[in-house]
Amino acid sequence: MAIISISRGCFSYGKRIAQDVAGKLGYECVNREIILETVRCFNISETDLLKSLEEAPGLLNRLTHGKEKYLSCFRAALLEHVKNDNVVYHGHAGHLLLPPVRHILKVRIIADMKTRVENLQKEEGLLAEDAEKKLRKEDIKRIEWTKLLYKQDIRDSRLYDIVIHLDTMTSEDACELICLAAKSKSFEKLESDEAMMKDAAISAHIHADLQNLCDAQVTCHNGNVRIIVPPSEIRVTGFGNLMIQNRINEQARQDLAAKILKIAQNIPEVRHAVCDIETAG
Image 1 (cartoon, rainbow, N blue to C red):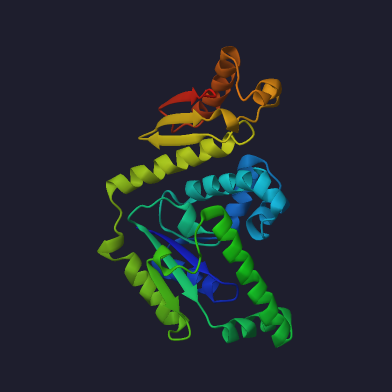
Image 2 (image 1 turned 45 degrees about the vertical axis):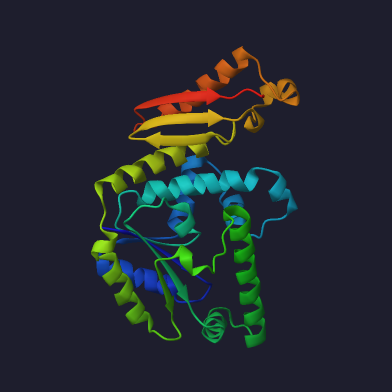
């Protein structure tokens, strides 16, 4: 039982390989489904979510929490979907959004530009020159986006367990290699991994639910949740005047803590929750 995250460039056969791997292993194959789940669970705009995940971040997004809000909701939906294993996910930054547990197999699939251009031409009927320009623009956007949000270079092979070059290997062989790795002892699930996945899903869900109030540090261990809110991260409009002074009074802190704990306790898997709202030093 494993979770397989497949990263790939546009038109690199990644989707087909993901579907083939899922079929051979009897796993679920997901991509866009996570986006639809995010929209339903957190009542957000599908258009805005897609923009936050796909468009290159501009200056405005660097200065606001808008993109981080959508990413938080997306991560929560992803973790909730994959926490029970037997899933092949091919899509946005799975290898960076999932926790570091043993049974997650992270795969990067690379195809040469000529192959990708031909695939795009078949799909959209573009001239070869226009297809290559479009692919290179998309590649740069993904590299910049990943560096900004994750401080990582998507091309760094150290982020993956397996890097497959389709110019030297067929997609069929790639599928067999991934399946073999997923079934190996190296990616067997440990009991501690299962607990870590469940705790990560709880933390992510609470973090996403809190986005309109604050950007909190949320940790969870065996269902026991701790929430820490730095004073500079509070977003409740009712505390506006106090935020100018970079502080809130004791009653306001208690009211906000009560709201936060209510959100956390609405999640059935939470056993106990504590909240610490820090004051400005």
